[in-house]
Length: 219
Image 1 (spheres, rainbow, N blue to C red):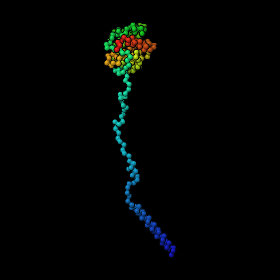
Image 2: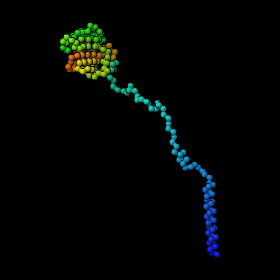
Image 3: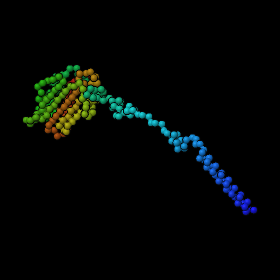
């Protein structure tokens, strides 16, 4: 009797377990699904806002123009700023003979100086000769600007000046005479070319410029 009871009890227990398992499985299969899958929720919550569109105006294709940058004023061909220690005022160009003579140039260059035929206002030219052949030229010009482009800044008698040289044969000196931008003659331009020069002609140019500069009327 006891053996049969045990068998019946075990069978009953097994039936209960099987029934319970079947109920659990059925509930799992039939349970409604609510909400969103985790993967979808993460995709939705991690979505980043779209980047703002940019236009060409926000990123200039070239740097700002150099004309917008401020800097110190410099003397140019039109002239904006010069230093004047000895002002010279020339309203009418004097004749060449009152500015320089052939003998004065000959003393500086050791060459014969012959003035060019034309005596243009503010321009004096001399042809130089030595040993029976050409030796160079000398020019004295009164001009409305210093025309300092490509020249080396320097000073002359305390005035702003500019110098250019070519080897040892040529020297060009431009001297500011006044800061008045409306003056008809604002600079003295002296050029000397010595074809057989073995040393710089600039010292001779400065002496030649000194002769002419001192003859100009003070301002």
